[in-house]
Length: 118
Image (cartoon, rainbow, N blue to C red; front, side, top):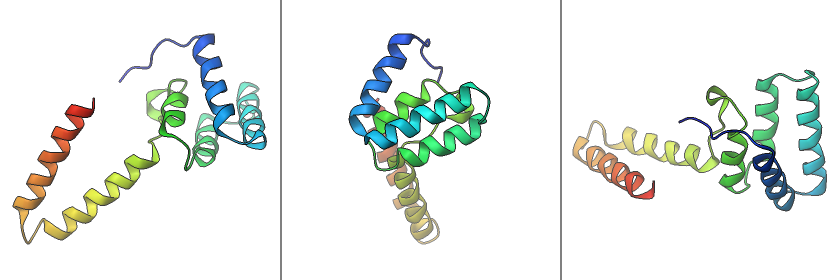
């Protein structure tokens, strides 16, 4: 999926949302990370790693909002995606050999749910 065009409005909206969701110290840390990136003291990989750690347990909109400013190859997956993938893997291990029909039905349900949620 392609990112929307970058704009000052997008950046300001994101910063306001982030500032209201994290502590003053975390917000200052975020600004320092961005400044270090601007002056090429940090790579994109390091920025993504640090921001991802900062956003653990925060609303998924903060992750998806930050992704707007990243190349697609560096997008951070919201934490709930990781949790969902862990659940799917557990179900797969449990049913793929003993009852593949259950696994197939589960995948169908997830696919329909995702289509309705989008």
